[in-house]
Amino acid sequence: MKIVHRTAGIIVSLAFIIILLITSFEIGIYSDFDWYEKEYEKYNVLTDLQMEMDDVMDVTHEMMSYLRGDRENLVIDTVVGGEEREFFNDREKAHMVDVQRLFLGGLDLQLAAFVIAITALLILAFSKAEWKKILPQSFLIGLGGFIVLAGAFGALVVTNFNKYFLLFHELFFDNDLWILDPDTDLMIRMLPEGFFFDMVMRIGSIFIALLIVSAGTSVFALWRQRREKKMEKRIK
Image (tube, rainbow, N blue to C red; front, side, top):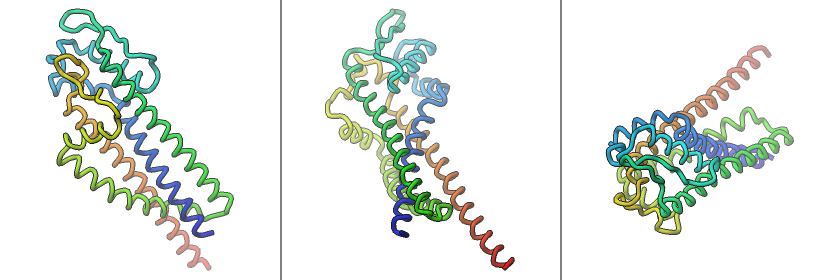
């Protein structure tokens, strides 16, 4: 049964890490729209778009609602260069269909990880495992392996973001709709590559913070268990 318990513990830990990763994306992308304003100012987006900040933020809110499936389409009227027009053209809309599919797929992955974690927890509970000990140990083991892989990947991304940003698009999109022209496509002017780099750093920082809190909680739980055992031995 020990093998079953350890396996279930590792499964819970890996599922939990996936949940934290997707949650970090949600927090980074949706928790603070003031961050978007700062990014737009940083990269002179308003000048490139010939738009006012309020109009750009309206487009941003609607676009992010669409990505979560809270909006049916990207028919968004706004003011560009003093004239009213649709913000997204047909190519951008087609690309955003793919992006929305990726976003919703991430949410589905988060839900699947949650279901898997609950199932593994039930196995531990019904098999009367020492889950208070197994879970923190398994999390620290799983976290160690994940850190090695994530650290290597993070180092690659930071040293050559452009290369891996392009690779990401080539891996996750089976068409060339993501290749946009700043002369005709407003979206690439609103979201330059620097914006995506900053977003990756933001999400990564949130994810690391959540992992640190989780690791600290696990270490504390193990320390407390050992302390309680020592106290029990002294009483005996």
